[in-house]
Length: 271
Image 1 (cartoon, rainbow, N blue to C red):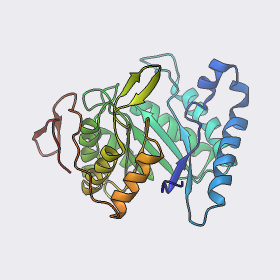
Image 2: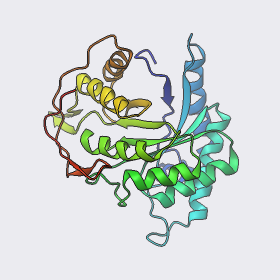
Image 3: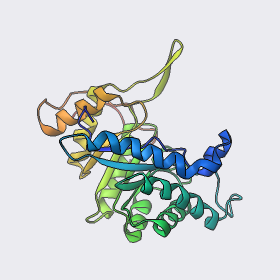
Image 4: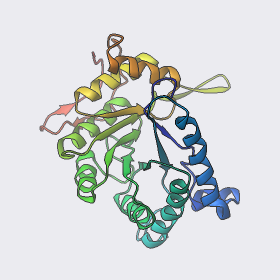
């Protein structure tokens, strides 16, 4: 929040019972999610400006039937349980993220709505040549999420900024009045000695923020590898207090359709 964030996510990405079961904590789902939301709520309630608490909900880690063994009704119940804890802890909205399957997204939305009236945001990870792991592109996701009536939609995580941006362009084209979210990674994770670091600098994050806002994205933040310096640079660029950095983006993993029938490739991209 000191870097300028208007939305903070709870540390509950893996807070469902299917994830917590790996640590023998699946009997404490509501407690863990409630306390995480309360901690975030405590921080923002002491600020002089309004900052929203978003209850983070990641994928179950299981494939839904018929591709896998997880029944859609059970998946909905898994998300309902987590949403209950987040709502009790004071979350302002529920934030379903890093998704790849529309079937799991629909189960998550059904589960959340069965226990809460909180607004729901959904983001997917377009990390496989501009599509999700399950083959979903930005247009398909955007149309379905619009029809499901989510409060916001977008992309998070991903392998590179060009692929993520291409999916966002597709979403903006079909989202209508629904805000679109960009929450990309800070480059690519790389080992530097014994530490894992991300390749993207704060300046790259700032240039990306400018690019996606120009494309029609209205909720802009950072996912893996983004530190306070990245968020502060994004905020400064978006507020116009510093010029847009002139940076080089990593190449796209494959040509991506921009929505007008043309193909956009990676390479040097001026902002």
